[in-house]
Image (cartoon, rainbow, N blue to C red):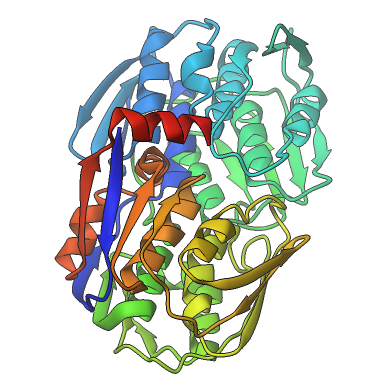
Length: 429
């Protein structure tokens, strides 16, 4: 088990290339199971979540050929087998296997999904959608079973805007009989990415990217090739790091429109940010950044996945900032770790109040989830001395080649093996 060591105080400069979107990849791989011939997906990020999904596909009979950033999935021999709890519990997005298997076989069995512990994230809206399409859903011995004689299109109103539920219902509905209408649908770019793949496979989907999605079911879907959109959260993380420590950093291979809410807040803080067709430029480090208030919202609002990384930046900004997370009420576990480093932050309910401008000191801290890990890396880049981060496996779930990319910008960080004593302390904490 590794720990990540970050030596602070080194300015960042140069270029960094952004990979494919993690939140797209984890949905596109299950979506490929709906085809009756091979599907090739390229620009895949090299992250552990992709590896776990590939193993799940192989477990149920699929053939996976992973070559660089491209993966070809041959789903012709896939069987509707129960999915193993061990792998499923490693990542929450494994729930997309439910919609894909239900759409293809009219039945599925999957353990309750895991992933980052961000508080209650029920899948009731997913189940509501599956039941509206004609499935019977039961919870038996810790696993969810879905069974349907046939799937029939329906009008489904999501009580809560949910990316996961929107995608899962899409996966099941593309092979249902008749028309499905998803109202109050999520509008994230990853929804459009999944719809683009399914449309290339022969699905009839209209309205992806709006709050009403219409799907006309098809009996058969064919294989195709698809390239994943750039990862807006990875891009945002490096943009925030550059805002903390940057001296002319170019974040390449991005879609700037996907980052409008972040760029607007950075501009409000006094960060010099510019963009062109496929890059964002952070020009120079500003030690007099101003505090701002941020509220996370569904797209196109400020993304909850950038709440934790931007908290580290707000700890540097002068004055008081308030950041409110309306999506996940337990997404403040990084705050205690930032306090260990000298940050002055208080949490009340869904909001964190940050008294910025304090010097951070390197410390031993623990990443409790993926984006908390990114926040601690950013804090380590700013801090005096060396920051020691455990729980690195969370970071590996969603950031491809994090150390290499940051070192390419001039950061100093490295991995060390944890001692047995440190591993025991981590397990007990």
